[in-house]
Amino acid sequence: MYISRVPLDVSRRKTQIALVSPNKIHGAVEEAFSEKQDRNLWRIDILKGRTYLLIISAMKPDLSRIAVQFGFEEDWGETKEYDGLLKRIDKGSAWHFRLAANPVHSVKDGEKRGKVTAHTSEKYQLEWLNRQAAKKGFRILPDGAYVVESGWKIFKKANFQQKVRIFEAVYEGTLYVEDVDAFRDTLVSGIGREKAYGMGLLTVVKAEV
Image (tube, rainbow, N blue to C red; front, side):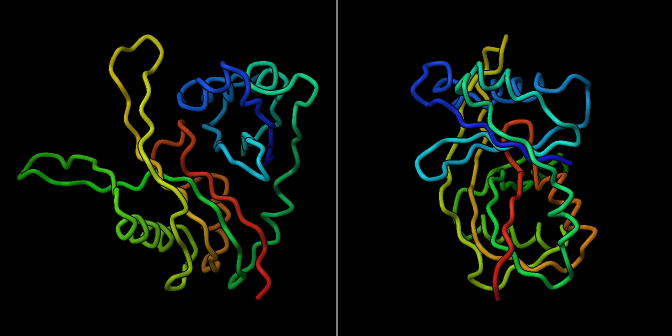
C-alpha cells in the first residue's frame, strides 16, 4: 500500500473548479494509475495554508498528470509506502485522526425501500461516527471527537445535467484500536459512502498517552 500527497495550485482556475467538482479530482486520481484497480481513497486537506490531495492506493501512482492539471509542474508531490504504519497498529493503541465522510441514514417510507438522508446536525454526525467505529475496529471516548467543518458539495457530473448533492462532515479527535485487522482494513478501505468523491479516507498519527 502507498500514501501519496500532491500540492495543489489554488491560484489556477482549473484547480478552483476541480475543488468544487469532486468528479474531476476523481477522474485525475484514476488516470494516475496504469492499470485498473480497486477504488482508491482520496481527500483534500489544507496544511499550514497549503492545499494538498492525499491518496491511499495499492499501486504506486504517477503523480505527474495530477500536478500538470491541478498542481505545480515543478513539484509533483511524494509517495511513501504505507505498510510501515499499518504494521505499527496494536490493540489498545491511541491515534489522533482526521476523517472526511458522508454521514447518512436510511429513512423508511412504509414498506418502501428507505431513502438515504444526510445527518446535517453535529449530534447525529457524531452518533454516526461512533456506530461506524464499532464496526471498523476502533472506539472513541465520550467527547473524544468533534466535527471541524461540514456542508454540502453540489456539482454536475460530466455529460449529465442533473446536480449531485453530497453532504460532507470532517472529523478530528483521538481513537483507540479495538480490532487490529478490522482497523487496518479501515485505513485502506475507508469509511462510509461516496468514496469516489473524496469521502471515507481516515488518516492517523500516533498519540502519546
